[in-house]
Length: 206
Image (cartoon, rainbow, N blue to C red):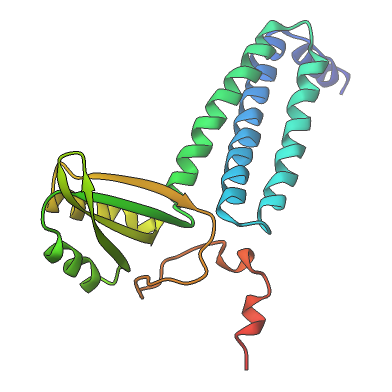
């Protein structure tokens, strides 16, 4: 028993533990808390005000564990590198995760110099709500097409726009909330739909 205790003490005081294990723990902890923080910030901007505090709770707990290890090994420069590297990696990973989740709504503005009547009719047949009007651009008359769509539909809309006009100019902007609109009827899985309005499930009951 004493021999096992001595081996454990030797391992925890070894250079391997100080310069490899602890920095790796800090690195992965920072990846977790910064990824959660990035997603939390984006959820707030999308209007998910009820789920964002839950993410914030776990974010701070993990951050405390990471900063505690840094302060406990304040003379170890490898811990500083791991802390900064985890922050950078966590920011990127958080954005990738949020992009794949595709939560919320987006505004698509398309400016086309080509006649767009057939394209607009096609979009409406697919169930998209489209507002269009004529305008005058730098090189003549143009058609401006305005849509508010679910972000999960953007990967399907971009090929339609490119097929209509490969040189089309369009912008995509995030929408925090929308009260009404025309959207496609097929259900799209949203893991936070009820958390955005937690009591809406009761209001639908008769």
